[in-house]
Length: 334
Image 1: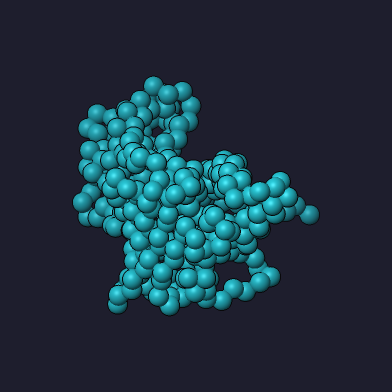
Image 2 (image 1 turned 30 degrees about the horizontal axis):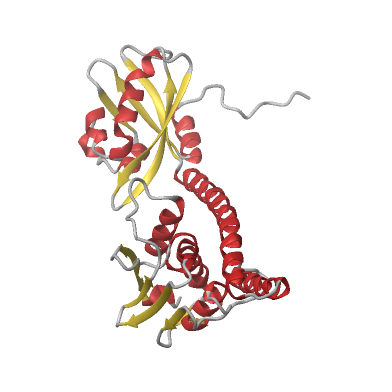
Protein backbone atom coordinates (compact mmCIF):
# COMPACT_ATOMS: atom_id res chain seq x y z
CA UNK A 1 0.00 0.00 0.00
CA UNK A 2 1.43 3.34 -1.01
CA UNK A 3 1.76 6.05 1.65
CA UNK A 4 0.70 9.54 0.65
CA UNK A 5 2.89 12.44 1.81
CA UNK A 6 1.22 15.11 3.90
CA UNK A 7 3.92 17.66 2.99
CA UNK A 8 2.45 20.50 0.92
CA UNK A 9 3.75 20.35 -2.66
CA UNK A 10 4.45 24.11 -2.58
CA UNK A 11 5.74 26.32 0.21
CA UNK A 12 3.18 29.08 0.09
CA UNK A 13 3.65 32.48 1.73
CA UNK A 14 1.34 31.31 4.53
CA UNK A 15 3.44 28.21 5.15
CA UNK A 16 6.67 30.24 5.20
CA UNK A 17 5.15 32.77 7.59
CA UNK A 18 4.22 30.01 10.03
CA UNK A 19 7.80 28.67 9.89
CA UNK A 20 9.48 32.07 10.36
CA UNK A 21 7.15 32.97 13.23
CA UNK A 22 8.03 29.70 14.93
CA UNK A 23 11.74 30.48 14.56
CA UNK A 24 11.44 34.13 15.60
CA UNK A 25 12.73 35.30 12.22
CA UNK A 26 12.01 38.84 11.01
CA UNK A 27 12.15 39.67 7.30
CA UNK A 28 13.56 42.66 5.45
CA UNK A 29 14.17 43.73 1.87
CA UNK A 30 16.50 46.43 0.59
CA UNK A 31 16.18 48.35 -2.66
CA UNK A 32 19.80 48.97 -3.65
CA UNK A 33 18.84 51.98 -5.80
CA UNK A 34 16.44 53.88 -3.53
CA UNK A 35 17.93 52.59 -0.22
CA UNK A 36 14.41 51.79 0.96
CA UNK A 37 14.08 48.96 3.48
CA UNK A 38 10.77 47.17 3.85
CA UNK A 39 10.16 45.34 7.14
CA UNK A 40 7.63 42.70 8.04
CA UNK A 41 5.51 42.96 11.17
CA UNK A 42 8.04 41.17 13.39
CA UNK A 43 10.90 43.39 12.16
CA UNK A 44 8.85 46.53 12.84
CA UNK A 45 8.28 45.33 16.42
CA UNK A 46 11.94 44.35 16.83
CA UNK A 47 13.16 47.79 15.80
CA UNK A 48 10.32 49.71 17.43
CA UNK A 49 9.35 51.29 14.10
CA UNK A 50 5.58 51.73 13.54
CA UNK A 51 4.35 49.63 10.61
CA UNK A 52 2.21 52.54 9.47
CA UNK A 53 5.37 54.42 8.53
CA UNK A 54 5.87 52.09 5.55
CA UNK A 55 9.30 51.58 3.99
CA UNK A 56 12.24 53.17 5.78
CA UNK A 57 15.85 53.77 4.78
CA UNK A 58 19.05 52.59 6.37
CA UNK A 59 19.56 56.11 7.69
CA UNK A 60 16.16 55.92 9.40
CA UNK A 61 17.18 52.70 11.14
CA UNK A 62 20.59 54.16 11.96
CA UNK A 63 18.97 56.37 14.57
CA UNK A 64 18.16 53.20 16.52
CA UNK A 65 21.58 51.54 16.20
CA UNK A 66 23.84 51.91 19.24
CA UNK A 67 26.28 54.78 18.57
CA UNK A 68 29.28 52.55 19.34
CA UNK A 69 28.19 50.10 16.63
CA UNK A 70 26.89 52.52 14.01
CA UNK A 71 30.05 53.13 11.95
CA UNK A 72 30.87 49.41 11.89
CA UNK A 73 27.35 48.47 10.82
CA UNK A 74 27.16 51.19 8.19
CA UNK A 75 30.45 50.04 6.62
CA UNK A 76 29.47 46.37 6.78
CA UNK A 77 26.02 46.99 5.35
CA UNK A 78 27.39 48.88 2.36
CA UNK A 79 29.97 46.16 1.75
CA UNK A 80 27.46 43.29 1.65
CA UNK A 81 27.01 43.49 -2.13
CA UNK A 82 30.67 42.60 -2.60
CA UNK A 83 30.63 39.64 -0.20
CA UNK A 84 30.55 36.17 -1.72
CA UNK A 85 28.04 33.89 -0.03
CA UNK A 86 26.20 34.54 3.19
CA UNK A 87 27.01 37.25 5.71
CA UNK A 88 26.06 37.95 9.32
CA UNK A 89 26.32 41.28 11.14
CA UNK A 90 25.63 41.44 14.89
CA UNK A 91 24.97 44.81 16.52
CA UNK A 92 23.03 46.54 19.28
CA UNK A 93 19.89 48.60 18.79
CA UNK A 94 18.19 50.99 21.19
CA UNK A 95 14.72 49.79 22.07
CA UNK A 96 12.86 52.01 24.49
CA UNK A 97 14.99 52.33 27.61
CA UNK A 98 16.85 49.08 26.90
CA UNK A 99 19.11 47.41 24.36
CA UNK A 100 18.69 44.49 22.02
CA UNK A 101 21.26 42.53 20.09
CA UNK A 102 20.22 41.96 16.48
CA UNK A 103 21.80 39.73 13.86
CA UNK A 104 21.26 40.83 10.24
CA UNK A 105 21.78 38.01 7.74
CA UNK A 106 21.62 37.76 3.99
CA UNK A 107 23.58 36.82 0.86
CA UNK A 108 26.11 39.07 -0.84
CA UNK A 109 27.35 39.58 -4.38
CA UNK A 110 23.73 40.20 -5.47
CA UNK A 111 22.88 36.53 -4.97
CA UNK A 112 19.11 36.14 -4.92
CA UNK A 113 18.50 39.75 -5.91
CA UNK A 114 15.12 40.27 -7.54
CA UNK A 115 15.04 43.30 -9.79
CA UNK A 116 16.96 45.74 -7.63
CA UNK A 117 15.79 44.32 -4.29
CA UNK A 118 17.85 42.14 -1.94
CA UNK A 119 16.37 40.06 0.86
CA UNK A 120 17.45 38.93 4.31
CA UNK A 121 16.41 38.32 7.90
CA UNK A 122 16.84 39.81 11.36
CA UNK A 123 17.22 37.62 14.44
CA UNK A 124 17.00 38.79 18.05
CA UNK A 125 20.19 37.30 19.56
CA UNK A 126 20.07 39.21 22.86
CA UNK A 127 20.02 36.10 25.06
CA UNK A 128 23.01 34.58 23.27
CA UNK A 129 25.01 37.81 23.51
CA UNK A 130 24.22 38.23 27.21
CA UNK A 131 25.36 34.65 27.82
CA UNK A 132 28.59 35.34 25.91
CA UNK A 133 29.19 38.52 27.92
CA UNK A 134 28.58 36.63 31.17
CA UNK A 135 31.11 33.95 30.17
CA UNK A 136 33.68 36.60 29.21
CA UNK A 137 33.13 38.43 32.49
CA UNK A 138 33.52 35.20 34.46
CA UNK A 139 36.72 34.28 32.59
CA UNK A 140 38.13 37.75 33.15
CA UNK A 141 37.18 37.68 36.82
CA UNK A 142 38.83 34.29 37.32
CA UNK A 143 42.05 35.51 35.71
CA UNK A 144 41.93 38.70 37.77
CA UNK A 145 41.39 36.77 41.01
CA UNK A 146 44.29 34.38 40.34
CA UNK A 147 46.65 37.31 39.78
CA UNK A 148 45.40 38.95 42.96
CA UNK A 149 45.97 35.76 44.98
CA UNK A 150 49.69 35.86 44.24
CA UNK A 151 49.87 39.55 45.14
CA UNK A 152 47.92 38.98 48.36
CA UNK A 153 50.13 36.06 49.38
CA UNK A 154 53.25 38.19 48.98
CA UNK A 155 51.72 41.14 50.86
CA UNK A 156 50.47 39.00 53.75
CA UNK A 157 53.93 37.43 54.05
CA UNK A 158 55.43 40.91 54.44
CA UNK A 159 52.85 41.83 57.09
CA UNK A 160 53.47 38.61 59.04
CA UNK A 161 57.22 39.17 58.96
CA UNK A 162 56.98 42.60 60.63
CA UNK A 163 56.10 41.30 64.09
CA UNK A 164 57.28 37.68 63.98
CA UNK A 165 60.38 36.91 66.05
CA UNK A 166 60.87 33.37 64.74
CA UNK A 167 60.02 31.44 61.60
CA UNK A 168 57.47 29.45 63.61
CA UNK A 169 55.67 32.64 64.71
CA UNK A 170 55.66 33.91 61.14
CA UNK A 171 54.23 30.61 59.86
CA UNK A 172 51.51 30.67 62.53
CA UNK A 173 50.61 34.28 61.78
CA UNK A 174 50.50 33.68 58.04
CA UNK A 175 48.36 30.57 58.53
CA UNK A 176 45.81 32.58 60.55
CA UNK A 177 45.62 35.21 57.83
CA UNK A 178 45.16 32.66 55.07
CA UNK A 179 42.48 30.96 57.15
CA UNK A 180 40.69 34.29 57.47
CA UNK A 181 40.83 34.71 53.69
CA UNK A 182 39.41 31.21 53.30
CA UNK A 183 36.51 32.15 55.56
CA UNK A 184 35.94 35.29 53.51
CA UNK A 185 35.96 33.19 50.36
CA UNK A 186 33.09 31.11 51.73
CA UNK A 187 31.01 34.29 51.82
CA UNK A 188 31.39 34.73 48.08
CA UNK A 189 30.85 31.08 47.19
CA UNK A 190 27.15 30.38 47.60
CA UNK A 191 26.19 26.70 47.72
CA UNK A 192 22.86 24.99 47.17
CA UNK A 193 23.35 22.79 50.19
CA UNK A 194 23.53 25.66 52.64
CA UNK A 195 20.87 28.32 52.89
CA UNK A 196 22.31 31.64 54.02
CA UNK A 197 20.49 34.16 56.16
CA UNK A 198 20.95 37.89 56.51
CA UNK A 199 24.39 38.92 57.80
CA UNK A 200 25.24 41.98 59.88
CA UNK A 201 27.34 44.41 57.88
CA UNK A 202 29.85 44.82 60.73
CA UNK A 203 30.37 41.05 60.99
CA UNK A 204 30.77 40.78 57.23
CA UNK A 205 33.43 43.52 57.16
CA UNK A 206 35.29 41.97 60.11
CA UNK A 207 35.54 38.58 58.40
CA UNK A 208 36.62 40.13 55.12
CA UNK A 209 39.25 42.47 56.60
CA UNK A 210 40.71 40.41 59.48
CA UNK A 211 43.50 38.95 57.36
CA UNK A 212 44.76 42.40 56.35
CA UNK A 213 45.29 43.86 59.83
CA UNK A 214 48.67 43.57 61.56
CA UNK A 215 47.35 41.36 64.38
CA UNK A 216 45.15 39.26 62.12
CA UNK A 217 42.06 40.88 63.62
CA UNK A 218 40.27 44.14 62.86
CA UNK A 219 41.03 46.89 65.35
CA UNK A 220 44.75 47.62 65.10
CA UNK A 221 45.26 49.41 61.78
CA UNK A 222 41.81 48.72 60.37
CA UNK A 223 38.86 50.29 62.17
CA UNK A 224 35.25 49.51 61.31
CA UNK A 225 32.39 51.61 62.63
CA UNK A 226 29.00 50.79 61.14
CA UNK A 227 25.45 50.83 62.49
CA UNK A 228 23.21 47.77 62.69
CA UNK A 229 22.65 47.04 59.01
CA UNK A 230 21.62 43.67 57.65
CA UNK A 231 22.91 42.38 54.32
CA UNK A 232 20.65 39.85 52.64
CA UNK A 233 22.03 36.65 51.12
CA UNK A 234 21.38 37.97 47.61
CA UNK A 235 23.73 40.92 48.26
CA UNK A 236 26.42 39.31 50.45
CA UNK A 237 28.37 37.98 47.47
CA UNK A 238 28.40 41.30 45.62
CA UNK A 239 29.38 43.39 48.64
CA UNK A 240 32.06 40.89 49.65
CA UNK A 241 33.59 41.03 46.17
CA UNK A 242 33.67 44.83 46.28
CA UNK A 243 35.28 44.98 49.73
CA UNK A 244 37.78 42.27 48.81
CA UNK A 245 38.77 44.20 45.68
CA UNK A 246 39.28 47.44 47.65
CA UNK A 247 41.34 45.62 50.31
CA UNK A 248 43.45 43.92 47.65
CA UNK A 249 44.22 47.26 46.02
CA UNK A 250 45.08 48.75 49.40
CA UNK A 251 47.48 45.97 50.35
CA UNK A 252 49.13 46.14 46.91
CA UNK A 253 49.31 49.90 46.37
CA UNK A 254 47.61 51.80 49.19
CA UNK A 255 47.69 52.41 52.92
CA UNK A 256 47.81 48.74 53.94
CA UNK A 257 51.00 48.27 51.94
CA UNK A 258 52.83 50.48 54.47
CA UNK A 259 53.56 49.69 58.12
CA UNK A 260 52.05 52.98 59.31
CA UNK A 261 49.03 53.02 57.02
CA UNK A 262 45.50 52.86 58.37
CA UNK A 263 42.03 52.12 57.05
CA UNK A 264 38.73 53.41 58.44
CA UNK A 265 35.40 52.06 57.22
CA UNK A 266 32.33 53.99 58.35
CA UNK A 267 28.70 53.83 57.36
CA UNK A 268 25.56 55.95 57.52
CA UNK A 269 21.95 55.10 56.73
CA UNK A 270 19.05 57.22 55.53
CA UNK A 271 15.56 56.37 54.36
CA UNK A 272 16.61 54.93 51.00
CA UNK A 273 20.39 54.46 50.95
CA UNK A 274 23.28 52.95 52.86
CA UNK A 275 26.48 54.98 52.41
CA UNK A 276 29.81 53.33 53.24
CA UNK A 277 33.01 55.41 53.27
CA UNK A 278 36.38 53.69 52.90
CA UNK A 279 39.18 56.02 54.04
CA UNK A 280 42.90 55.20 53.74
CA UNK A 281 45.68 57.24 55.36
CA UNK A 282 49.44 56.90 55.70
CA UNK A 283 50.08 55.03 52.50
CA UNK A 284 52.51 55.84 49.67
CA UNK A 285 52.04 59.06 47.69
CA UNK A 286 48.69 58.96 45.92
CA UNK A 287 48.71 58.98 42.14
CA UNK A 288 45.39 59.32 40.33
CA UNK A 289 44.96 56.47 37.87
CA UNK A 290 45.03 57.56 34.23
CA UNK A 291 43.88 55.87 31.05
CA UNK A 292 41.41 53.04 30.79
CA UNK A 293 40.16 51.54 34.04
CA UNK A 294 41.47 48.09 34.88
CA UNK A 295 39.31 44.98 35.09
CA UNK A 296 39.04 45.22 38.87
CA UNK A 297 37.75 48.80 38.74
CA UNK A 298 35.23 47.92 36.05
CA UNK A 299 34.09 44.88 38.03
CA UNK A 300 33.58 46.94 41.20
CA UNK A 301 31.68 49.69 39.39
CA UNK A 302 29.46 47.24 37.57
CA UNK A 303 28.73 45.29 40.76
CA UNK A 304 27.75 48.38 42.75
CA UNK A 305 25.63 50.00 40.04
CA UNK A 306 23.89 46.98 38.55
CA UNK A 307 23.53 44.64 41.53
CA UNK A 308 23.35 47.03 44.49
CA UNK A 309 21.53 49.80 42.63
CA UNK A 310 24.04 52.40 43.78
CA UNK A 311 27.18 54.26 42.86
CA UNK A 312 30.88 54.37 43.73
CA UNK A 313 33.11 57.44 43.79
CA UNK A 314 36.88 57.74 44.29
CA UNK A 315 38.58 60.80 45.80
CA UNK A 316 42.34 61.23 45.96
CA UNK A 317 43.40 63.60 48.76
CA UNK A 318 47.15 63.77 49.46
CA UNK A 319 46.91 61.60 52.58
CA UNK A 320 45.19 58.68 50.86
CA UNK A 321 42.24 57.41 48.85
CA UNK A 322 38.62 57.86 49.93
CA UNK A 323 36.00 55.59 48.37
CA UNK A 324 32.31 56.31 48.83
CA UNK A 325 29.85 53.53 48.12
CA UNK A 326 26.17 54.41 47.97
CA UNK A 327 23.86 51.39 47.94
CA UNK A 328 20.08 51.12 47.85
CA UNK A 329 18.87 49.92 51.22
CA UNK A 330 16.13 47.79 49.69
CA UNK A 331 18.60 46.12 47.32
CA UNK A 332 21.24 45.55 50.03
CA UNK A 333 18.82 43.84 52.36
CA UNK A 334 17.15 41.75 49.68
